[in-house]
Image 1: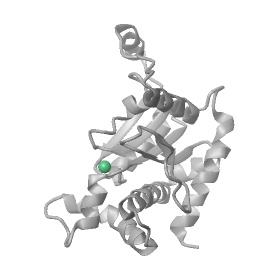
Image 2: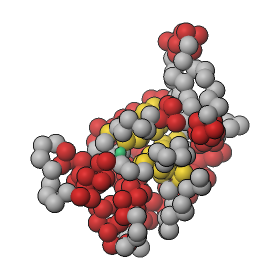
Image 3: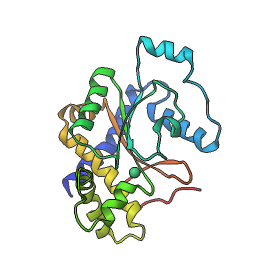
Image 4: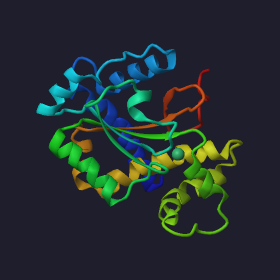
Length: 223
Ligand SMILES: [Zn+2]
């Protein structure tokens, strides 16, 4: 078994292990409930007003970290129907992890005691598509992004799946999860102790649904 697969399997186990530290409603369930409201068009519509701002001026306690793509169709606070102060959000093109991203996660974990990270890829990701279609390394700093995504594209091509782009999106999410754990002793320790959970997920830009990314064949999203 490849090392990255082992790390990824460990992450999935860690989600269950992390559950006991959660309150009555787990952070993951809170996010998924918000996404169900977003899909149904029944947004709670609260958490952005003056009262909430006054509360947050005194301190904040976000309940989840979301590492998402910068794509304008994937704003985490909206697709999880959260107001201000609920999510610690990190975004870059392709939801890849470099030292600044991993340092931001460590900050949220160590200083704000956030118990959950969701790494969120999405259907039709332009950064993944650019990597898939590039004949050579893109000029400028975009190459730093495609370098990170390239291993997922190579894996997806090998899979010979019909939807290579989506396969690469999901492999990229898994690779990002693995890289975060591999490059952060702080996060690795907390995951091993069951104090921190990491979830790999994909947002579908057509249905609005967030679905977990699991190993093995992709389950098509329910319409
Ligand atoms: Zn994207």
